[in-house]
Length: 139
Image (tube, rainbow, N blue to C red; front, side, top):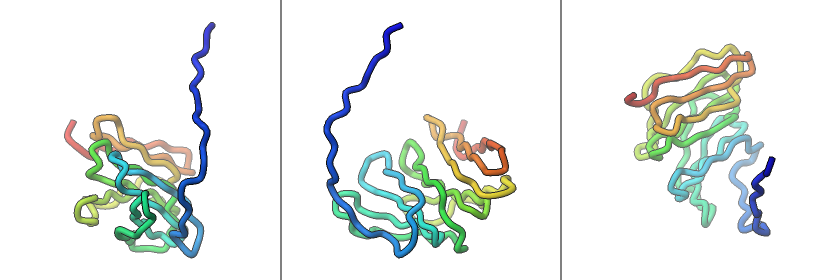
């Protein structure tokens, strides 16, 4: 059996910046690479310019529950956040507003969110041992 190997270029630190006074727990690039979402232990999702580190905005989850994971939809229009309260929120990237009602099916913290390649589905994974699949766009 032949195994393909990837060539990893040398890597170096390009930029380091402080985004929160507390623990940073999640990070996600937008699909276009022009936005970096950073989730903190304080329950705030901070939006940053990845080239400069400059603040672009903040999304307040409505509670102080730590943000554990973040994911942008393939078209970049939505941002999903998962938290310790067992809640998944969908954010409209253009307005910064919430889209629909919170997704609450897990019985404990949610540590994983992932969009399907076409953006119609969202998978969430919780510490309760469950994986949930949500319709979040047209099928």
